[in-house]
Length: 158
Image (cartoon, rainbow, N blue to C red):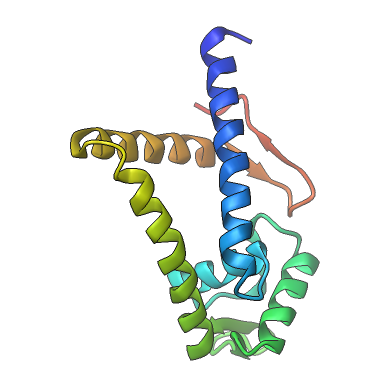
């Protein structure tokens, strides 16, 4: 591993650990799991979605995504309706209480992001956001998902 690759790995590892703890700390006090929160976010952003679409968005197997949705539905945060074009499929969408919960979680997380950004001057913030966005796009473009069972970075890409 060259020095830049090793340094990037270390920084991303540290950042991921902090954010995993932060997400768990901020989200679980709302009585849902981090994965359930991600599902609500995906449904708010891209919904309504089929279960297969949601599973792909979350990089989960369909059975795992189904359990996530079942829990959210029991809590009244997600509803299922028949797909208008495919009677066999169901569409998932957030309920009004699910949207309120997602908004509350997002408010908590954004307050923390605001505090973090306040430590940097505006020019650095903009550059940092653009660079992290480019890094996220590059990582996502090389991600090969195999239904949540195994994900790998395609070394042939780009």
